Length: 208
Image (cartoon, rainbow, N blue to C red):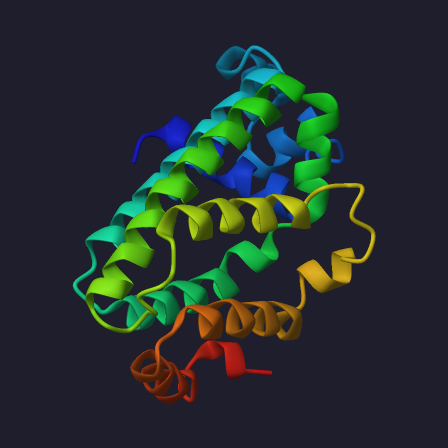
């Protein structure tokens, strides 16, 4: 891994946890263990750092999605494994990150949103089709509708006008588990529910 990639991964981790605005160039230099002068030799400004951080996040999302799509597990096994990883990673992302990106870097926010929608649509569509083919999802499910619905619900969680969902909800394991079970139970056939119930007994979603 080259030095720049290591730098961006460290900075991205801080942005995701604390938001973008609250992290200054002084903070970034300290995190990387370099002088502020050296930081400006490596990066034009904070916008340059944020841009590279978003590109790194896109790359991570693409690689994890490809890994998910290429897995030989059945769709419910894949989803349980994916959600266990979600617990360890994405629940650490604070809504402040999305808010700051939208307010202070609107062009990056829009391009990142388009990227997420396209990636999520393709992955969800394939996931639903595979589940129907495996007999684990209901045959009357429309993959296109479910993919669009998933994108809409996911986007709504980070929409500032949605007041019923608090920052505490977004970071809550219990809240996420409830949504996950609501969503997957609606997709599953009877055979699929049997598999789901068995796998859920060992899932990290049940951890306190």
